[in-house]
Length: 193
Image 1 (cartoon, rainbow, N blue to C red):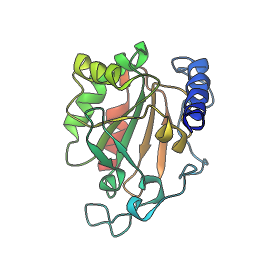
Image 2 (cartoon, helix red, strand yellow):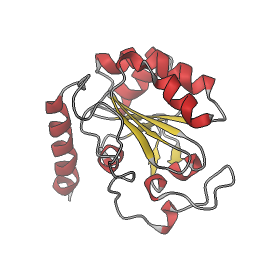
Image 3 (tube, rainbow, N blue to C red):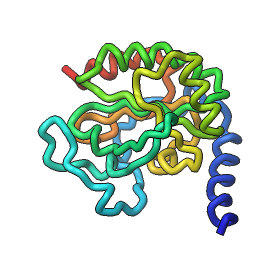
Image 4 (tube, helix red, strand yellow):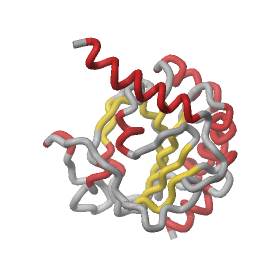
């Protein structure tokens, strides 16, 4: 049983690690016009569904997942429905992720109540993830501990230092690298109007 649990996680870590610390340009570094807006999602259960927030009567499929924060708190992505959402995929040992931390925290503070910002940590232990959050001062917004890579797979993220930005309806409007977080505020401003 333990082998079945570890093998997918090991394969994910190996494949993500081989990619490196994120490229700054290339075919995946820009807007995702024409790309499917809802990434492949694992089967959801009744506990995954919800009604969302901000008057939304239905939670988009892309936000029907749960997890645990680096602080051990339960997290339900359905609570993100109805607002633009920034998902920041990072790894504790990644220098590009560390360089994005200050700008990401600034955007989270600037758009609090208007947009969601959620870190999705992977490729290391939860202890290292908590240390990263403490060291970078990014504790003002939630960070998921995605040691098994489930959320990364859900959003088809294959390298750290990536942003996936969803509009209020859960449609992907941007997926890529923003070196130092540059341009993140403008992208969120365009969605909060």
